[in-house]
Image (cartoon, rainbow, N blue to C red):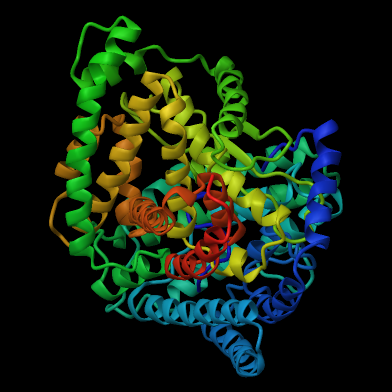
Length: 601
């Protein structure tokens, strides 16, 4: 089934700083939602049809986005849950199709089409998984994520109060409930005799086993942090369930895990489509290879200037990046150091008229060990999209590499001065934070936020936002911005190459460590991402970025001297998460004519 949560991490517990900014944000969000167009309210009413069908199967996901009423519920892993899920959303589809035939408002019709496509994709994905894969679940991670979504300062207290009930249900202590770990085992074992189904990969099973204890400790830490009383019995019960599940995984699942990480072509093709990469993989690889060569050349041209600025004797970009990384920021200063750059970015965005920014501070914090195990890369946790009363999304920076082992276990990719600029621009402003804040404050419909979401829409904007800020960064920040753009081109060529059997893991890893200059730990995480965690997703950054660049170039050519970057970027944010083709149509049929009617600047 297609989840409603963000794919990676956006690939996603969040301190919301109380104080002057909180009241302003709440008032701004409420005013924007009240002032939203009438068609948005109509569209949201129709989206509720699909939410009601999906929520009993994915309560953690809909709750993550702020939908009330499901916070004490947990994912349905009961017998025949995949068929029951398909039947539920098929019923919703019939109702929405009838509404499409009756609807006359163009915006609502567009949203109905988004909802219908979401249902079709969900059904297709469910059928493909049932056809090809043994249904193994990393149940400890599922439990941690479900609790972490509730026990967060960005979640209203009345919703956090349901965390114990959810934990009891996970542990099988609530009336009528069964431990979710037992349900996960049953779903795996009932199909184990079907030898045509692919078992999980050895790498994903090993990683799950490495992290199980961290998840159990993370759940206990969250209940302690939020002072939830009466949870001891449930915490002890879930800790035992997690330990027993890990032992079962080690003895039953791991011996049968597969070494070959490649997916059947049908599954990989579906993954690309689901993440929004609607281009032939061969053509994508060709474009990415060309971009890789061009970006690498730009880095080589810039490296001597960075070396001169920083007193580095080397001039090759690889040696310059290695030298920049050696000046590591101590862990106890990392958050404050990032905040220095975050505070400097907003004035640049305003001065250079890149995009409108909220009149409040952006939120950023370090990740807990359990969060870092679940998502070991910098990521953004959005605020609730439904019923938001001022909660903010947060840029979360992992500290360390939980589950890593050996001398090459540590990252050195996120904790030096020059990298702060591009990570803050991507995860924060003008990237993910601004995009998701805009959806709340500008009254974007649920269809264009929850259901239109895919990685191309989201990561394309964030990489484009990185590029918009690059000219105003210090030279070392510009070099690292190019390094991360080189990584996105590498992803777009290596992900399909690995999944199509055109390169082996060792050679792909050397590209990442020797050319992109990632740490061995980060390169290993990248390779797991392409082959185990989310095959196809990593292509979305490069592809989404290029689609926005193409659209902007066409718009500049159409408008000439009337082109206004600030107006263009604001218009893109106003559209929520429209897919690239629909976004282009909106720009060409609405933005361009409106700008032509204005007096040239």
